[in-house]
Length: 139
Ligand SMILES: [Zn+2]
Image (tube, rainbow, N blue to C red; front, side, top):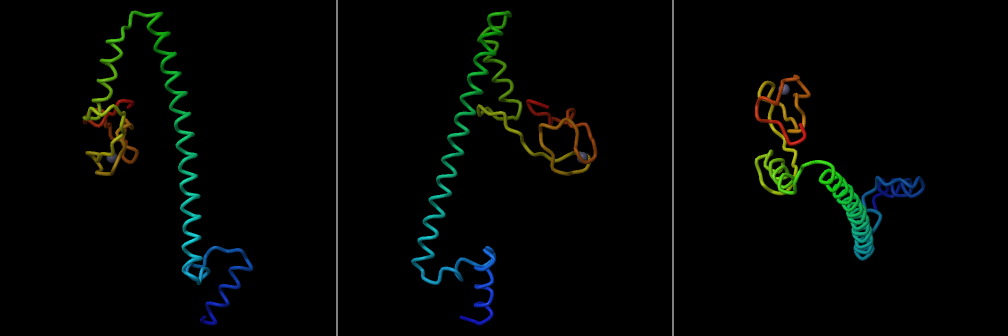
């Protein structure tokens, strides 16, 4: 090992720093592979936790939406057909019928910067984007 590398390796271990490359720390290919396996396992575990949290969030939102709709239907003249029509209308507001309320990124016609379709005005030049077909479903 290069004396300079050795110096930085010991310095890093002593300080608990993470700036050394894994190749320098794991001299044996099997050690590196083992480390990579553990890292991949941890990443997979984190992704699963996130999926569980997102699923719980979606279920709460679905419940709240169902509660709101049943309340509205009971207390107003709105019908299921009107709800379905409005869902289709909002779905199509971004130009695609995909069951999603996507926020697209478009170019401001005045300053040419990238802006989200959910903003009614350009964040940079304050140009009114609603009159230029940039309005999204929640603009
Ligand atoms: Zn602009």
